[in-house]
Image (tube, helix red, strand yellow):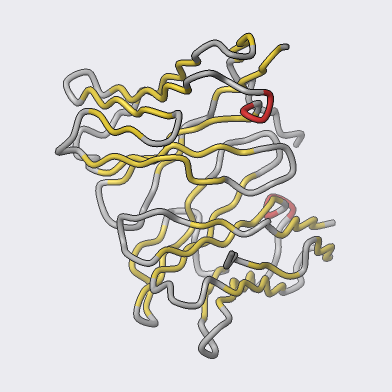
Amino acid sequence: GESVGLHLPTLSVQEGDNSIINCAYSNSASDYFIWYKQESGKGPQFIIDIRSNMDKRQGQRVTVLLNKTVKHLSLQIAATQPGDSAVYFCAETDSWGKFQFGAGTQVVVTP
Amino acid sequence: EPEVTQTPSHQVTQMGQEVILRCVPISNHLYFYWYRQILGQKVEFLVSFYNNEISEKSEIFDDQFSVERPDGSNFTLKIRSTKLEDSAMYFCASSVLALNEQFFGPGTRLTVL
């Protein structure tokens, strides 16, 4: 049968503004989380990771926040640029290799 | 900068045929992974591999799938008898440590007719 594509939520952001992308996870035993960026036709690209013993981690222009109480992860991108336009998704694991991926959010940066 | 490479970029095969997808992970990495992404769907974990053994595998990774590291550089995914629903992008990834940054290859688009 015909496969139905995911209808990704879209976040439209003005260039220079900050972006916040959210991810809810279901496995309370997950202890390692990654945010990926995927541009059209390319493989996922690692952005930032965080372990469950932390609630915040900062990288270059990006910050990941982890709230284990409500099983929520967010990615903040500061001063969003046109090159940030992509699908962003989170991944989680409670072991060292078996990752569960979120569906993703389409970020569109407008000039 | 070192990168993960995958060949071929696109593979077309008939249903029931065997395919082998090839990956060359980054040379000093110890952990290797295969993922797939059906068009328009989310990325799905297939298998992880360390020390010449499968460490974890998903429900998707049934008896039709196998992985191998035949030499010091290649990491392969074999699908024994392809089905229409195996059509997807297959990504290989590698990392230095277990819970660590994974570097993805560009993917192989598998089309099963």
